[in-house]
Image (cartoon, rainbow, N blue to C red):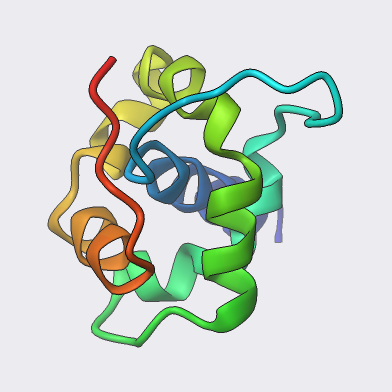
Length: 95
């Protein structure tokens, strides 16, 4: 169970990094677990949900931070994360 949660968190963080511009907002709490609704879409051919896209936009200020994390990089740079970024209409970040 812990492995699944960790995997979902990593996948979620990857998606977040795909979102594009990063604007820091004090109201956002950076937590890659917030992106867990995107895990299945990143890891498979599933279409991202509205909740996934909303979470990606919400975590936007944190994406570059996630991208710098060596444990999250492989998910963030994955084809699945880029697919989710495109479908959610959130530009891939340039950090």
